[in-house]
Image: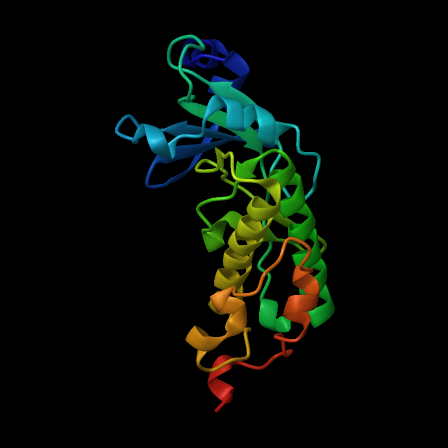
Length: 220
């Protein structure tokens, strides 16, 4: 899809709504879709690559945003689109402190499975922004994979790397809600991410680290 085609889509032009402006892109809502258009000054390396987009689009998981179409300013010559569409994922005001440990471990298990899907495509997870992980009552979804990239790293090593990246996603979100129990979090082995193996089960790893409804500050 090109900008020209998008502008000629009367249904889109009559019904889209501006949602928010980020550092690299403007976000619009159209029906149940998100339209993400990179800003003119956005550096190329911050835009998703065409081959990454097509590969990630084949992921059939409720834990990963459903990608739609790429959008180009002029034809399809570029290796990076100037925007793209994706299914809108509406998060809920989930306070992890109020969630059961079972719920969090279930969500972590889903993310662990997603990590395997991405690794199988020889893609490195990148940009573990806590705002790119959306929780609902019965699911968790990763969005905005713009900085993911293909790699020739052997699969067994890539698996470990991607698990570590998924841990970053989880830790940053858990820390936002002050759920990890260790007061000196810099020494927490979960945060250090040492000893992670390709067959490490993240849910088992976290089950020993979560204490329901207790803030880090409560621990001496």
